[in-house]
Length: 450
Image (cartoon, rainbow, N blue to C red; front, side, top):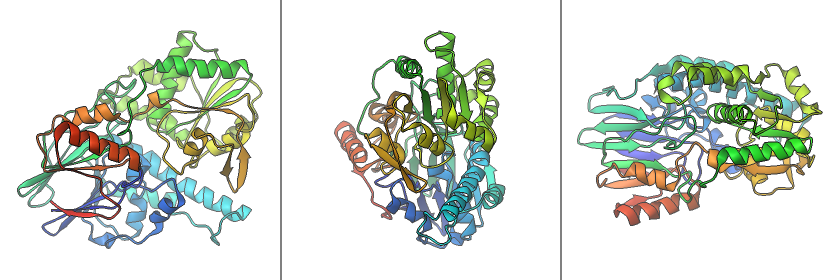
Protein backbone atom coordinates (compact mmCIF):
# COMPACT_ATOMS: atom_id res chain seq x y z
CA UNK A 1 0.00 0.00 0.00
CA UNK A 2 1.18 3.51 -0.83
CA UNK A 3 -0.26 6.78 0.47
CA UNK A 4 0.14 10.13 -1.28
CA UNK A 5 -0.69 13.33 0.60
CA UNK A 6 -2.34 15.60 -1.98
CA UNK A 7 -3.85 18.16 0.41
CA UNK A 8 -4.41 19.24 4.02
CA UNK A 9 -0.64 19.44 4.57
CA UNK A 10 0.52 22.68 6.19
CA UNK A 11 -3.08 23.88 5.95
CA UNK A 12 -6.60 22.89 7.02
CA UNK A 13 -7.97 22.86 3.47
CA UNK A 14 -7.84 20.71 0.34
CA UNK A 15 -8.05 17.31 2.06
CA UNK A 16 -7.01 14.55 -0.38
CA UNK A 17 -5.23 11.28 0.42
CA UNK A 18 -4.56 8.76 -2.34
CA UNK A 19 -4.23 5.07 -1.43
CA UNK A 20 -2.76 2.74 -4.06
CA UNK A 21 -2.65 -1.06 -3.70
CA UNK A 22 -2.98 -4.12 -5.95
CA UNK A 23 -3.75 -2.03 -9.02
CA UNK A 24 -6.53 -0.02 -7.32
CA UNK A 25 -6.61 3.65 -6.28
CA UNK A 26 -8.85 5.11 -3.59
CA UNK A 27 -9.00 8.87 -3.00
CA UNK A 28 -9.94 9.60 0.63
CA UNK A 29 -11.62 13.02 0.61
CA UNK A 30 -11.69 15.36 -2.35
CA UNK A 31 -11.59 18.87 -0.92
CA UNK A 32 -11.14 22.40 -2.18
CA UNK A 33 -8.11 24.46 -1.24
CA UNK A 34 -9.12 27.75 0.40
CA UNK A 35 -7.35 30.71 1.98
CA UNK A 36 -4.06 32.00 0.58
CA UNK A 37 -3.96 32.51 -3.19
CA UNK A 38 -1.08 30.08 -3.60
CA UNK A 39 -3.32 27.43 -2.00
CA UNK A 40 -6.38 28.31 -4.08
CA UNK A 41 -4.31 28.05 -7.25
CA UNK A 42 -3.79 24.36 -6.49
CA UNK A 43 -7.45 23.81 -7.37
CA UNK A 44 -6.48 24.62 -10.97
CA UNK A 45 -3.27 22.56 -11.07
CA UNK A 46 -2.97 19.30 -12.95
CA UNK A 47 -3.51 16.30 -10.71
CA UNK A 48 -0.62 14.03 -9.82
CA UNK A 49 -2.36 11.27 -11.78
CA UNK A 50 -5.03 10.99 -14.46
CA UNK A 51 -8.43 11.37 -12.80
CA UNK A 52 -9.71 8.48 -14.89
CA UNK A 53 -7.21 6.19 -13.13
CA UNK A 54 -8.78 6.77 -9.70
CA UNK A 55 -11.17 3.89 -9.00
CA UNK A 56 -13.25 5.43 -6.19
CA UNK A 57 -13.57 8.39 -3.83
CA UNK A 58 -14.58 8.05 -0.19
CA UNK A 59 -15.62 11.20 1.69
CA UNK A 60 -15.26 11.53 5.46
CA UNK A 61 -17.79 14.40 5.53
CA UNK A 62 -19.50 17.08 3.48
CA UNK A 63 -17.61 20.30 4.26
CA UNK A 64 -16.16 21.78 1.08
CA UNK A 65 -12.56 21.45 2.24
CA UNK A 66 -13.25 17.68 2.10
CA UNK A 67 -15.83 17.36 -0.71
CA UNK A 68 -15.74 20.55 -2.77
CA UNK A 69 -13.35 19.30 -5.49
CA UNK A 70 -15.60 16.36 -6.46
CA UNK A 71 -17.33 18.11 -9.41
CA UNK A 72 -13.96 19.23 -10.76
CA UNK A 73 -12.58 15.69 -10.45
CA UNK A 74 -15.52 14.38 -12.47
CA UNK A 75 -14.95 17.04 -15.13
CA UNK A 76 -11.29 15.95 -15.27
CA UNK A 77 -12.36 12.42 -16.19
CA UNK A 78 -13.10 10.53 -12.96
CA UNK A 79 -15.63 7.79 -13.74
CA UNK A 80 -15.94 5.85 -10.47
CA UNK A 81 -18.27 5.99 -7.49
CA UNK A 82 -18.16 8.44 -4.59
CA UNK A 83 -18.86 6.69 -1.28
CA UNK A 84 -20.10 8.46 1.87
CA UNK A 85 -22.69 8.27 4.64
CA UNK A 86 -26.36 9.07 4.06
CA UNK A 87 -26.16 12.44 5.82
CA UNK A 88 -23.01 13.37 3.88
CA UNK A 89 -24.81 12.56 0.63
CA UNK A 90 -27.77 14.71 1.66
CA UNK A 91 -25.55 17.61 2.72
CA UNK A 92 -23.43 17.42 -0.44
CA UNK A 93 -26.71 17.64 -2.35
CA UNK A 94 -27.00 21.15 -0.89
CA UNK A 95 -23.35 22.19 -0.63
CA UNK A 96 -21.93 21.23 -4.02
CA UNK A 97 -24.58 22.86 -6.27
CA UNK A 98 -24.43 25.94 -4.04
CA UNK A 99 -20.63 26.00 -4.38
CA UNK A 100 -20.92 25.83 -8.17
CA UNK A 101 -23.58 28.55 -8.18
CA UNK A 102 -21.46 30.85 -6.01
CA UNK A 103 -18.44 30.31 -8.25
CA UNK A 104 -20.53 31.23 -11.29
CA UNK A 105 -21.85 34.33 -9.49
CA UNK A 106 -18.37 35.44 -8.44
CA UNK A 107 -16.97 34.91 -11.93
CA UNK A 108 -19.87 36.88 -13.42
CA UNK A 109 -19.41 39.68 -10.85
CA UNK A 110 -15.68 39.82 -11.60
CA UNK A 111 -16.31 39.98 -15.34
CA UNK A 112 -18.95 42.71 -15.03
CA UNK A 113 -16.85 44.86 -12.69
CA UNK A 114 -13.46 44.10 -14.21
CA UNK A 115 -11.63 43.25 -10.99
CA UNK A 116 -10.23 39.88 -12.11
CA UNK A 117 -6.83 39.42 -13.73
CA UNK A 118 -8.35 36.70 -15.90
CA UNK A 119 -10.31 37.55 -19.02
CA UNK A 120 -12.77 36.08 -18.73
CA UNK A 121 -12.91 34.91 -15.11
CA UNK A 122 -14.21 31.32 -15.01
CA UNK A 123 -15.74 29.17 -12.25
CA UNK A 124 -13.84 26.06 -11.21
CA UNK A 125 -17.11 24.25 -11.92
CA UNK A 126 -20.75 25.16 -12.41
CA UNK A 127 -23.93 24.34 -10.54
CA UNK A 128 -24.96 22.01 -13.36
CA UNK A 129 -21.64 20.15 -13.18
CA UNK A 130 -22.03 19.78 -9.42
CA UNK A 131 -25.52 18.29 -9.83
CA UNK A 132 -24.18 15.86 -12.43
CA UNK A 133 -21.44 14.73 -10.03
CA UNK A 134 -24.04 13.92 -7.35
CA UNK A 135 -25.30 11.06 -9.51
CA UNK A 136 -22.05 9.22 -8.72
CA UNK A 137 -22.69 9.12 -4.95
CA UNK A 138 -23.33 5.84 -3.16
CA UNK A 139 -24.28 5.60 0.51
CA UNK A 140 -22.29 3.60 3.07
CA UNK A 141 -23.89 2.91 6.47
CA UNK A 142 -21.88 3.56 9.61
CA UNK A 143 -20.19 0.55 11.23
CA UNK A 144 -20.60 -1.82 8.29
CA UNK A 145 -17.58 -3.30 6.55
CA UNK A 146 -17.49 -3.08 2.74
CA UNK A 147 -15.28 -5.14 0.44
CA UNK A 148 -15.12 -3.20 -2.83
CA UNK A 149 -12.18 -5.04 -4.42
CA UNK A 150 -10.14 -8.18 -3.68
CA UNK A 151 -7.78 -7.47 -0.80
CA UNK A 152 -9.54 -4.25 0.28
CA UNK A 153 -12.17 -3.44 2.91
CA UNK A 154 -13.28 -0.28 4.69
CA UNK A 155 -15.58 0.88 7.47
CA UNK A 156 -16.84 4.28 8.65
CA UNK A 157 -17.35 5.19 12.33
CA UNK A 158 -19.01 8.33 13.67
CA UNK A 159 -16.61 11.27 14.08
CA UNK A 160 -19.07 13.73 15.64
CA UNK A 161 -17.89 16.78 13.69
CA UNK A 162 -21.06 17.42 11.65
CA UNK A 163 -23.94 15.25 10.49
CA UNK A 164 -22.60 12.27 8.58
CA UNK A 165 -18.96 12.88 9.55
CA UNK A 166 -16.94 9.69 9.83
CA UNK A 167 -13.55 8.28 10.64
CA UNK A 168 -12.43 5.78 8.02
CA UNK A 169 -10.59 2.51 8.64
CA UNK A 170 -9.17 0.81 5.53
CA UNK A 171 -7.76 -2.73 5.56
CA UNK A 172 -5.73 -4.46 2.87
CA UNK A 173 -3.75 -7.69 2.67
CA UNK A 174 -1.89 -7.66 5.98
CA UNK A 175 -2.32 -4.01 6.94
CA UNK A 176 -4.67 -1.24 8.04
CA UNK A 177 -4.83 2.55 8.14
CA UNK A 178 -7.21 4.83 10.05
CA UNK A 179 -8.20 8.34 8.92
CA UNK A 180 -9.64 10.43 11.72
CA UNK A 181 -11.48 12.78 9.38
CA UNK A 182 -12.42 15.96 11.22
CA UNK A 183 -13.09 14.98 14.82
CA UNK A 184 -15.85 16.57 16.85
CA UNK A 185 -15.83 17.43 20.53
CA UNK A 186 -16.96 15.26 23.42
CA UNK A 187 -18.68 18.34 24.91
CA UNK A 188 -20.31 19.78 21.77
CA UNK A 189 -23.60 21.60 22.39
CA UNK A 190 -25.34 19.93 19.43
CA UNK A 191 -23.36 16.96 18.07
CA UNK A 192 -22.78 13.57 19.69
CA UNK A 193 -19.14 12.71 20.57
CA UNK A 194 -16.85 10.71 18.25
CA UNK A 195 -16.82 6.93 18.50
CA UNK A 196 -13.74 5.07 19.63
CA UNK A 197 -12.27 3.20 16.67
CA UNK A 198 -10.55 -0.18 16.37
CA UNK A 199 -6.73 0.15 16.36
CA UNK A 200 -4.88 0.30 13.04
CA UNK A 201 -1.27 -0.10 11.85
CA UNK A 202 -1.16 3.51 10.60
CA UNK A 203 -3.15 6.58 11.63
CA UNK A 204 -3.79 9.87 9.80
CA UNK A 205 -5.05 12.38 12.37
CA UNK A 206 -6.27 15.95 11.95
CA UNK A 207 -4.62 18.74 13.97
CA UNK A 208 -6.79 21.83 13.47
CA UNK A 209 -6.55 22.62 17.18
CA UNK A 210 -3.44 20.55 17.83
CA UNK A 211 -1.68 23.41 19.61
CA UNK A 212 -4.42 24.59 21.96
CA UNK A 213 -7.22 23.76 24.34
CA UNK A 214 -10.72 25.12 24.02
CA UNK A 215 -11.21 27.83 26.63
CA UNK A 216 -13.04 26.74 29.75
CA UNK A 217 -15.56 29.56 29.51
CA UNK A 218 -19.29 30.19 29.59
CA UNK A 219 -19.92 30.06 25.84
CA UNK A 220 -23.55 31.11 26.12
CA UNK A 221 -22.54 33.92 28.45
CA UNK A 222 -19.93 35.24 26.00
CA UNK A 223 -22.43 35.08 23.15
CA UNK A 224 -25.09 36.84 25.27
CA UNK A 225 -22.65 39.58 26.22
CA UNK A 226 -21.64 40.24 22.61
CA UNK A 227 -25.24 40.37 21.39
CA UNK A 228 -26.49 42.52 24.28
CA UNK A 229 -23.80 45.19 24.04
CA UNK A 230 -24.26 45.40 20.26
CA UNK A 231 -28.00 45.86 20.76
CA UNK A 232 -27.30 48.57 23.36
CA UNK A 233 -25.28 50.44 20.72
CA UNK A 234 -28.16 50.12 18.27
CA UNK A 235 -26.01 47.87 16.08
CA UNK A 236 -26.29 44.71 14.02
CA UNK A 237 -24.50 41.42 14.79
CA UNK A 238 -23.20 39.79 11.60
CA UNK A 239 -22.22 36.15 12.13
CA UNK A 240 -20.32 34.45 9.29
CA UNK A 241 -21.16 30.78 9.78
CA UNK A 242 -20.73 27.50 7.95
CA UNK A 243 -24.14 26.59 6.57
CA UNK A 244 -23.70 23.04 7.83
CA UNK A 245 -23.22 22.65 11.56
CA UNK A 246 -22.17 26.07 12.86
CA UNK A 247 -25.28 27.88 11.63
CA UNK A 248 -27.55 25.39 13.41
CA UNK A 249 -25.51 25.51 16.61
CA UNK A 250 -25.58 29.31 16.66
CA UNK A 251 -29.33 29.45 16.07
CA UNK A 252 -29.86 26.93 18.86
CA UNK A 253 -27.68 28.96 21.24
CA UNK A 254 -29.54 32.17 20.37
CA UNK A 255 -32.86 30.42 21.02
CA UNK A 256 -31.62 29.24 24.44
CA UNK A 257 -30.53 32.78 25.31
CA UNK A 258 -33.84 34.26 24.21
CA UNK A 259 -35.83 31.68 26.18
CA UNK A 260 -33.78 32.53 29.27
CA UNK A 261 -34.20 36.27 28.55
CA UNK A 262 -30.44 36.75 28.56
CA UNK A 263 -30.55 38.76 25.31
CA UNK A 264 -33.09 41.24 23.87
CA UNK A 265 -35.90 39.83 21.76
CA UNK A 266 -34.34 41.03 18.49
CA UNK A 267 -34.99 39.56 15.04
CA UNK A 268 -32.70 36.78 13.81
CA UNK A 269 -32.17 36.41 10.06
CA UNK A 270 -30.71 33.29 8.48
CA UNK A 271 -29.42 34.43 5.11
CA UNK A 272 -28.48 31.05 3.73
CA UNK A 273 -31.18 29.03 2.01
CA UNK A 274 -28.87 26.05 2.17
CA UNK A 275 -28.52 26.32 5.95
CA UNK A 276 -32.31 26.40 6.21
CA UNK A 277 -32.48 23.14 4.28
CA UNK A 278 -30.02 21.48 6.65
CA UNK A 279 -32.68 21.45 9.38
CA UNK A 280 -34.61 18.74 7.52
CA UNK A 281 -31.44 16.65 7.43
CA UNK A 282 -31.05 17.08 11.20
CA UNK A 283 -34.56 15.66 11.63
CA UNK A 284 -33.69 12.67 9.47
CA UNK A 285 -30.64 11.75 11.58
CA UNK A 286 -31.64 12.16 15.25
CA UNK A 287 -29.06 9.59 16.43
CA UNK A 288 -26.17 11.88 15.45
CA UNK A 289 -27.07 14.98 17.48
CA UNK A 290 -28.54 16.09 20.80
CA UNK A 291 -31.47 18.22 19.54
CA UNK A 292 -35.06 17.14 20.10
CA UNK A 293 -37.66 17.28 17.34
CA UNK A 294 -39.07 20.46 18.93
CA UNK A 295 -35.64 22.08 19.00
CA UNK A 296 -35.03 21.13 15.37
CA UNK A 297 -38.33 22.72 14.37
CA UNK A 298 -37.45 25.87 16.31
CA UNK A 299 -34.34 26.37 14.18
CA UNK A 300 -36.69 27.49 11.41
CA UNK A 301 -39.86 28.65 13.16
CA UNK A 302 -38.05 31.18 15.38
CA UNK A 303 -35.83 32.52 12.60
CA UNK A 304 -36.55 34.69 9.57
CA UNK A 305 -35.34 32.63 6.60
CA UNK A 306 -34.00 34.85 3.82
CA UNK A 307 -34.38 33.16 0.46
CA UNK A 308 -34.29 35.69 -2.36
CA UNK A 309 -31.56 38.06 -3.51
CA UNK A 310 -33.93 41.00 -2.98
CA UNK A 311 -34.54 39.98 0.64
CA UNK A 312 -30.80 39.58 1.14
CA UNK A 313 -30.12 43.08 -0.18
CA UNK A 314 -32.70 44.59 2.18
CA UNK A 315 -30.75 43.21 5.14
CA UNK A 316 -27.92 45.62 4.29
CA UNK A 317 -29.97 48.62 5.40
CA UNK A 318 -31.39 47.49 8.77
CA UNK A 319 -32.06 50.40 11.14
CA UNK A 320 -32.64 48.42 14.35
CA UNK A 321 -30.69 45.85 16.41
CA UNK A 322 -30.68 42.51 14.63
CA UNK A 323 -28.70 39.31 14.19
CA UNK A 324 -27.71 38.10 10.71
CA UNK A 325 -26.33 34.55 10.36
CA UNK A 326 -24.94 34.00 6.88
CA UNK A 327 -22.40 31.82 5.04
CA UNK A 328 -19.54 31.40 4.58
CA UNK A 329 -17.93 30.73 7.94
CA UNK A 330 -14.49 32.12 7.05
CA UNK A 331 -15.93 34.96 4.93
CA UNK A 332 -14.35 33.50 1.81
CA UNK A 333 -17.51 33.95 -0.26
CA UNK A 334 -21.29 33.91 -0.21
CA UNK A 335 -23.91 36.42 0.87
CA UNK A 336 -22.11 37.34 4.07
CA UNK A 337 -19.61 39.38 2.04
CA UNK A 338 -22.32 41.89 1.16
CA UNK A 339 -23.25 42.17 4.84
CA UNK A 340 -19.63 42.75 5.81
CA UNK A 341 -19.41 45.54 3.23
CA UNK A 342 -22.53 47.12 4.73
CA UNK A 343 -21.81 46.72 8.46
CA UNK A 344 -18.04 46.43 9.00
CA UNK A 345 -17.43 50.20 8.63
CA UNK A 346 -19.78 51.12 11.53
CA UNK A 347 -18.45 50.88 15.12
CA UNK A 348 -21.95 50.15 16.47
CA UNK A 349 -21.96 46.75 14.80
CA UNK A 350 -20.28 43.44 15.65
CA UNK A 351 -18.76 40.77 13.42
CA UNK A 352 -18.84 37.51 15.35
CA UNK A 353 -16.96 34.41 14.19
CA UNK A 354 -17.62 31.03 15.75
CA UNK A 355 -14.90 28.67 14.63
CA UNK A 356 -11.43 28.16 13.19
CA UNK A 357 -10.31 30.75 10.65
CA UNK A 358 -7.79 29.36 8.15
CA UNK A 359 -4.74 31.45 7.35
CA UNK A 360 -5.25 33.62 4.29
CA UNK A 361 -9.03 33.95 4.67
CA UNK A 362 -10.88 37.18 5.34
CA UNK A 363 -12.02 35.66 8.60
CA UNK A 364 -8.42 35.19 9.76
CA UNK A 365 -7.59 38.77 8.72
CA UNK A 366 -10.56 40.18 10.63
CA UNK A 367 -9.88 38.14 13.76
CA UNK A 368 -6.25 39.21 13.50
CA UNK A 369 -7.20 42.87 13.75
CA UNK A 370 -7.21 44.01 10.12
CA UNK A 371 -8.38 47.61 9.75
CA UNK A 372 -9.67 46.88 6.24
CA UNK A 373 -10.42 43.83 4.11
CA UNK A 374 -10.68 43.44 0.36
CA UNK A 375 -14.14 42.44 -0.85
CA UNK A 376 -15.21 42.36 -4.50
CA UNK A 377 -12.11 44.20 -5.61
CA UNK A 378 -12.28 47.11 -3.13
CA UNK A 379 -11.03 47.64 0.42
CA UNK A 380 -13.71 47.93 3.11
CA UNK A 381 -12.78 49.71 6.38
CA UNK A 382 -13.35 47.69 9.56
CA UNK A 383 -14.59 49.70 12.53
CA UNK A 384 -17.07 47.15 13.89
CA UNK A 385 -16.20 45.09 16.95
CA UNK A 386 -14.74 41.73 15.86
CA UNK A 387 -15.06 38.64 18.09
CA UNK A 388 -14.12 34.99 17.61
CA UNK A 389 -15.84 32.54 19.97
CA UNK A 390 -13.48 29.58 19.56
CA UNK A 391 -15.38 27.81 22.33
CA UNK A 392 -18.08 27.16 19.69
CA UNK A 393 -15.68 25.34 17.39
CA UNK A 394 -16.77 21.95 16.05
CA UNK A 395 -13.21 20.56 16.16
CA UNK A 396 -11.66 18.54 18.96
CA UNK A 397 -8.86 20.37 20.81
CA UNK A 398 -5.42 18.93 21.60
CA UNK A 399 -6.48 16.90 24.65
CA UNK A 400 -9.58 15.57 22.88
CA UNK A 401 -7.44 14.55 19.88
CA UNK A 402 -4.99 12.79 22.19
CA UNK A 403 -7.89 11.13 24.01
CA UNK A 404 -9.25 9.78 20.73
CA UNK A 405 -5.79 8.43 19.86
CA UNK A 406 -5.55 6.64 23.22
CA UNK A 407 -7.63 3.80 21.76
CA UNK A 408 -4.80 2.97 19.35
CA UNK A 409 -2.20 0.32 20.25
CA UNK A 410 1.29 1.32 19.14
CA UNK A 411 0.67 2.09 15.46
CA UNK A 412 3.72 1.81 13.20
CA UNK A 413 3.41 5.49 12.31
CA UNK A 414 1.06 8.42 12.89
CA UNK A 415 0.70 11.06 10.18
CA UNK A 416 -0.41 14.49 11.45
CA UNK A 417 -2.32 16.52 8.86
CA UNK A 418 -5.11 19.11 8.47
CA UNK A 419 -3.51 21.81 10.60
CA UNK A 420 -1.51 25.00 10.26
CA UNK A 421 2.24 24.23 10.66
CA UNK A 422 2.43 25.26 14.33
CA UNK A 423 -0.66 23.22 15.26
CA UNK A 424 0.45 20.10 13.37
CA UNK A 425 3.94 20.15 14.88
CA UNK A 426 2.57 20.76 18.39
CA UNK A 427 0.31 17.71 18.12
CA UNK A 428 3.19 15.65 16.71
CA UNK A 429 5.30 16.55 19.75
CA UNK A 430 2.42 15.84 22.15
CA UNK A 431 1.85 12.38 20.60
CA UNK A 432 5.54 11.52 20.77
CA UNK A 433 5.79 12.62 24.39
CA UNK A 434 2.60 10.82 25.44
CA UNK A 435 2.96 7.56 23.52
CA UNK A 436 6.50 7.41 22.04
CA UNK A 437 4.97 6.56 18.66
CA UNK A 438 6.74 7.41 15.41
CA UNK A 439 5.06 10.58 14.18
CA UNK A 440 5.36 12.45 10.87
CA UNK A 441 4.00 15.75 9.58
CA UNK A 442 3.92 15.17 5.80
CA UNK A 443 4.48 17.84 3.17
CA UNK A 444 2.36 18.45 0.07
CA UNK A 445 2.61 15.51 -2.34
CA UNK A 446 4.75 13.40 0.01
CA UNK A 447 4.45 9.66 -0.61
CA UNK A 448 4.99 6.77 1.83
CA UNK A 449 4.99 3.00 1.50
CA UNK A 450 2.96 1.28 4.21
